[in-house]
Image (tube, rainbow, N blue to C red; front, top):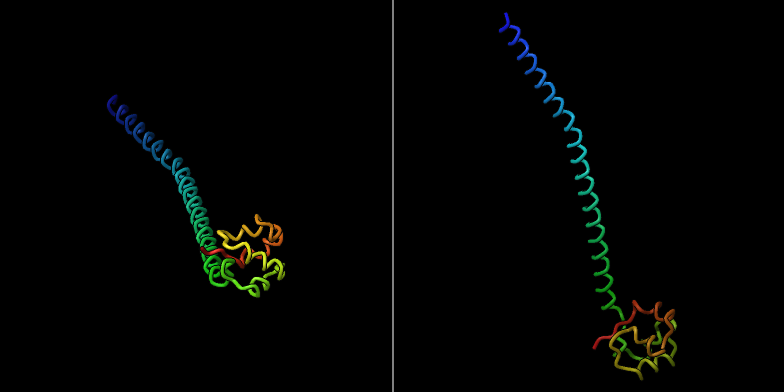
Length: 130
């Protein structure tokens, strides 16, 4: 009879241990799901940021590519071409020609041919090629 009670107790303790183990697994499972969800969200955010950055980079490349093709070269443009730029008078075009060569378009400001505000309106329309 003692053996039977001991066996029942052992079976009961084993069953209780199994239940506790299973409940521990069930309890940790939601945190794993939460962790997986966090990883998924971080991955989605990183992917979205990469896509956005790639689109911005592509737009910048397109702008630069098109600007170089349609922009006036300060070192080679004629007086009439220069005068066609916003805020560029014939006198300023003469100053540009007299100030050549330019190593960068920003020199229109540093050489006091245009103000910064005037340069901001033409900076996408001019380049200074060597």
